[in-house]
Length: 463
Ligand code: S3P
Image (cartoon, rainbow, N blue to C red):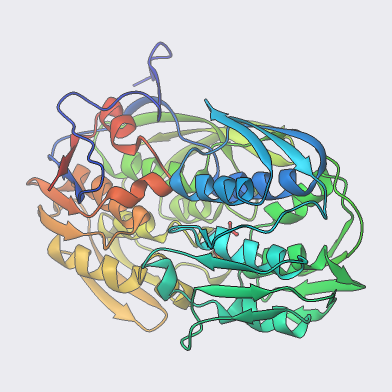
């Protein structure tokens, strides 16, 4: 089936008939079996790039115009934090944001703690940026973020001379005291984390000498690319990136591609549904983010990648996905950091594949917005899927053509788990209730409406 070009749905289209969006109450998805996915869909802007555009735009000299900005709660929290530090920001309006940069040394002390909600990227990157400021600040987050490990950033920052207090458990709130100077360090990260790398590079803007970070495996490189776009020198060689403090950033336009992490739900949904055929235009295909494409292709998915082009510093392409029988695979270790946010969706693909899928070396999944290994395994069990939890991964026995059962699964407030299970309903033989979905707004506002417009039988309900 060829997508109808006249029907181009976007995530900002209104809610589907009968859907009720709730404010301040628990939100769930009710998904009926028998849906499919068809047509062209514009998924919202990349979350990682949206955060970074606000941060670097705020620190630049001059005015930065951002287009395609993700108007999700996470990136809006970053935007609000910079407003509270005296940065004038217009928008977002239809994804357009205008940031009047205050220059590297122009931030003002916030009058109260900066609350970044559910956003791990905001907290960890801001921690590095704030560590080098001549004022004190405090970062706080929601219950989920307040459980996530922060020593991975506060320890290397302390080596740079930062003075940051965490809870006894090494979690937020983070109280950052003003220090006279930071100094560059040469740091080998024990975990492959773009948030840690980016945190240290942002601290490095304010440090004497050179700050170098080596990563055990390649992680997303949006910070490095965007620093270069803002004319800030960054030296990269293999798994090592270095920056020297003291230079200035020059404002530059940022065009944010569609988020491959949001597209992932549709890549999986269209692969597992019957008679599906969807097109996803202008999706970011940065090589450090395309693990989901590589893994789905190895599983037998029918995905075409066309019209490859550059969107500022980032490569993008149009993706087309059609239904295909999937087979279980052993996921190559090198793909893990390249697909780190896409595993909830990939586990649903594995549940619908023929044979076993094995993931190892992914202990990081246990410290995301939820413990994504445990929460996904519990939900898959509800759907009749045999999933064995491993310390650093999961073993999933795919059901092949046998349907998943319906019932009720709990997302534990994790946006990506909620969306992954919504897609699982495409292969269920009874209605599925996905609980606790309000946090989908952190990364994919309008998800239910977009999916409903494409043929998923989803409605939102409040309680
Ligand atoms: C992100 C990096 C990843 C990812 C997160 C966004 C970023 O986290 O899971 O959603 O924007 O740098 P880690 O770097 O901690 O793996």
